Image (cartoon, rainbow over all chains, first blue to last red; front, side):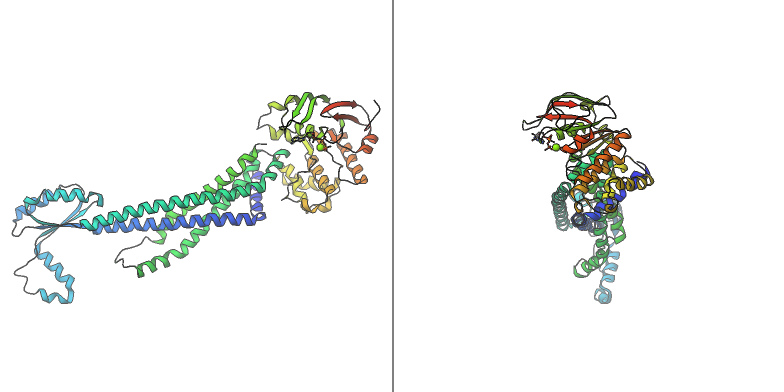
Length: 299
Length: 228
Ligand SMILES: Nc1ncnc2c1ncn2[C@@H]1O[C@H](COP(=O)(O)OP(=O)(O)OP(=O)(O)O)[C@@H](O)[C@H]1O
Ligand SMILES: [Mg+2]
């Protein structure tokens, strides 16, 4: 394609957009709405995943050791626990350290623990971080097998872990359903928009063919038009998300009892969302134009 | 050169548009195709443009058999056929100027050439003052002249005109026919389907008469209804 046809193609695309401005606006609004909903799902998914990662890292199994266990036995047990797969991190907390932490947690009221120093009731413990909730069962079973090596009790956050896993799976399923539903709705709406556009242009395409225009020459402006609709259809939801992201996230942080969790930053979300929306928008735009004129080129 | 051999077009509903027509038109000729309404004139023009395919027989233009033209060759074939359609077929979203310019844009003409050629062709058909109007703002005769301007702006070797004077007053009709004759004098083969008896009679050109899709008369320097 030489520069002349290129400039013709782009000019025609803009002219057609302006000429059929009602139709163009309808397509752009439809696409924007769909992509906006996709953006919301995307923000939710990204942040839920992030939340999950944070929660997983907070969850741990505490193993309390028998009273009066010898140092050799402790070292032996630590070695055996270390050998269990999926234990990503292990910390040994002696009974003295446990008391110190307890005091630190109580802050001003720490004096009520005075006197316990000599007769420390807190046991030695091991705190294990586990590499993924899926491996929780495995690690726990392995620990149960090590009971005879000086384990008093295993304090498992099992129920919490299970609940978390259920929520996680549920959210994933709901997310997938929402996105699938949106996909179907978008396709139906966009298909209908395109069908109307086609009927508006049927005569035009026919005439161009009879006057001797090649398929590529006819298709060019329509494809560029589809691309422009796709780009505008992506820019609008991006702008909306950009404006709304921080206020909404701050509102959620303030109003939800989610203690110390962090949300993904706007910059992070945008670095993923921008290419996604532009790609999807332009692809839908081009696909729409191509489908809409293909039938009518056959004359 | 246009050669038709046993050319037949039967429409989907069984109507015979053209029925075993054989004829030959040499390059540089000026031919009137006459016949009552429904005799097959438009069908012949459509076959020549390959808007429709023959049911039977052959149509050969400058050695090219139209039934074997590929999809890719079609635009280039059509560019050599300037056509004035009976129903004009102007692009409704483009101005008169743009409709004519379009025929040059598709062949990749430069903007300079377009800016030079289009106004002079519009002046030729008397539409220079309507350049910025849209087709639905024009009278039938003005639309017809736009269609003619579009057909000739690319200087095609063939010009097919289906009722080019149908909506025109006698004076303008004569202007158009004189224009067609000029174009023919410059070497373009011209085929005009028409009902305009006066014009055919006075022009003394070759006249082909169709009836029920068949050739019933073919006379050099003839009239609309010469004696047999
Ligand atoms: N698309 C079509 N489907 C079925 N029959 C058709 C079609 N187009 C034309 N015909 C029929 O073919 C015959 C020839 O029609 P055509 O349009 O070629 O006539 P014409 O000579 O151009 O007439 P007119 O002078 O009125 O323009 C007519 O009987 C017409 O009814
Ligand atoms: Mg006709």
